[in-house]
Image (tube, rainbow, N blue to C red; front, side):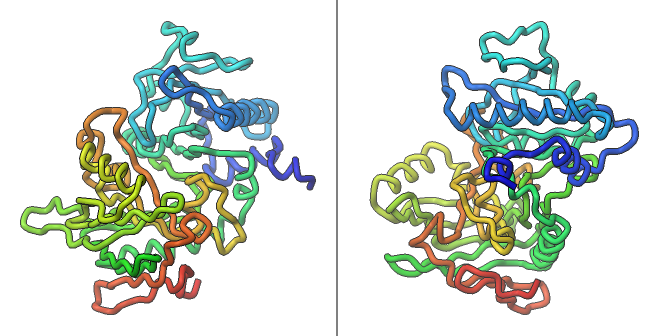
Length: 386
């Protein structure tokens, strides 16, 4: 396979992808491939242009192989929501093909509501700039859809769509089972400024498996995929505060920002520097951003996948911890806790050497419900047997 072919999916590969991931059912007639459109507030960029081109190409290829897939495929556009995991706008547009329109040229009379979209398109792939994971997970709780969310997707992620997802899913389910049985996770990070210790409270929560297979109506998840994840307990039970506490380091360029965590909330920034000041201002302006929203355990590094600087793929390689919105994962923090629609965010911080070279994951231990301690990771790698 040539280098160019490695980064493109043929019609046959796309049909196989839809069949493998979603396992279409008799009577399901249409697949929707979603794209968000730039506007005056968030102007276009080269990666966004390329992503929309990929989406349009996939629609054309799937349409050309309609007889093999047994389903129609439509391109669906909507105005971007200006932030990751913000709620969808009220309307979307099903396009006939041709050049993608600008937001200003969309005809309001031709728009449809997302409820109508879900009713007519039970399978959706969202190749968007801003993550649509949260709104599609929330929609999947109300509508019998399956949705693959692909924020920031790029052509160099295509090889990750060709992995053995049966084996990926097996490893993810094993990690989910461990998270289900854990009551806490203890982290030791090493930084140039010294060690940082953090405890995440995992009581009253169950894990989720995102292994690249979405066969059941009422489910949405990332693609490419390969992670188990859980929302730390956020203290919503009366008289039972969250025990999440400690210091969490995150590297921004050359600077390591250190957050002081208490009761599952980043309350202040202890470090100094431009990034530290920006993060401290963001916490003051938007306290919901400081919610520890997810502990994620990716598995794709073991399959030879390397980070490319896009969270969609990079977080699936190994350990990641997210800030912000958590309701789409079963937590308590949603759009109502943020100051505005545009402020809603769920952002992952990925702990692999290529993304945070000066933050070393020395140890991760799970405190199990039976009182035992399980050594989950040592020196950035899993220490359990898969």
